[in-house]
Length: 235
Length: 235
DNA sequence: CGACACGTTGATATCCCTCAAGGGGAGTGG
DNA sequence: CCACTCCCCTTGAGGGATATCAACGTGTCG
Image (cartoon, rainbow over all chains, first blue to last red; front, side, top):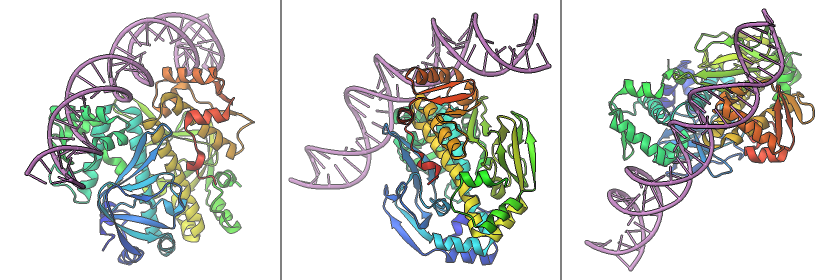
């Protein structure tokens, strides 16, 4: 059941057994990638989608002035580019952060899924829209929150998403981003990211060291972050 | 043909005559709204979608600290909340900017459209994903571009979108946002927005006065903005 | 005519960036 | 096994972009 983690991360609408089988059957093959490898290039014509089975991936965009904006982070169970099915190309790049295993689903198979089941269509469509809701939450963070709130918010989101798929151990989880990555995701420099991390550590709310996060005070972290998980559409 | 402007803004995939009729028939009724009126409240359960026929609408989110982030602007032909069909609620607010006319399409009718036609499904799905692509471009703007570039970028996007639906007159178009709105969309204060507008005016690139935009030098405006319209998926 | 919202500008403050330097860990090659 | 390199983390100092505060002008609407 390669699609099991996807269904964990997206419990509604609930699929019938037949639909689960259809989804599973749509997977053409699996592929392994090294860390920091490009999966999908900006604007290249696409004919398949990619479901992340293991590892972490991210999507980003570069600007004229050489700045990089990380648009999304992906954990096991996420489609990294299901939106390529209706769009036929992506306007950004998709990349692995760590070594990763991916399931490949041809666009043609997605089309057959949508023809076979309205519920499947809704589930797949919804998963692309939860992704968009995260884009908007990040936009709100970067546009309207302070540096420390942005960093705190990213950790809150990551904790909730990873817990959903069982990738946390108590208040601790692996999060192998560099401080440069964190900065590129939050619109801060790595230097300022470093200072915000120190602040969070000093007040005992969270420590981030060697790719491991340890949350000391979840309530206060949420407060600093202005975090409310309703945009993740888990309930 | 209430759906005509929608099809102009979303030319691909191209619908058959039957599908056009189906889409048109899905419209239950039309509604008029005053300016600055809330259309959809955050997290309220939804059973219908709203297609903007005339006027301008926007979507926004408020933060703890009382800041407002405008997430999207909508012009005639845009669904303002088609994503409510798979999501069942929205994590943000939808509001009119000007007086507006909307077409109402019940979720049940959308479901029937998706059952009736794969092409219609793709088109509707795609339109929600183009919306998401704009969310990501705004995220990139706010996270990685300077104040003047963000303002310039918003004008570039608006010009292209309005031209597509025939709402420009040469290099001029109506854009009845306040400078506070512009700031809320770009993550700037209205004071700083004002100074950026003055700068654009002084170098002869663009003037914005009394809700009317006049572009003086499109090429330079795009350069300042780091603008490339491929994320709008018009071609 | 008064109230109010928006636009404009100046002065000052602050958050965050840039530049710089040094330390530590991991990988590599001699 | 050690030296070397490279990348990342960390911290300090200074600067710049943008925010904040304040005041006044202008247009609109009841």
